Length: 118
Image (cartoon, rainbow, N blue to C red; front, side, top):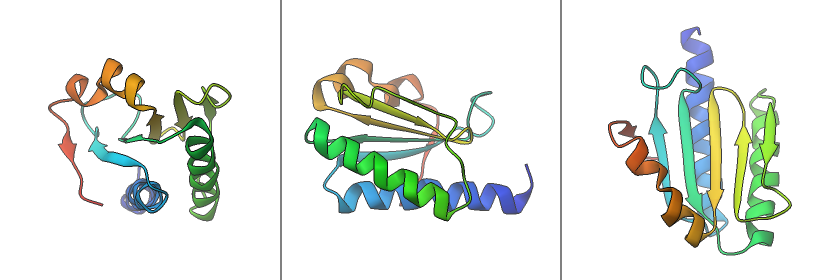
């Protein structure tokens, strides 16, 4: 990955975190997984207030990705609205409801990753 690609990826991860905050998600964390995960560079983890709100946030994050020239590779959990995963290869977005967020505790799993202020 070139420096400009990495900068765009990081900017997208931070823009998505800001968008989640503006749309009333809570406990938002951006983890830098470069050098720690073979699958992705950044995780965005947030808690939503309802399935409807979580889907709206994900739709807006997807529009933000397009604005950054980033294509979505996959999406899971959208219909259920308990844990929605958006996979942009270099950035993976996790929007949880409170129960699933506590159960899966991804921050603990990636406890050695640097947290990035957004």
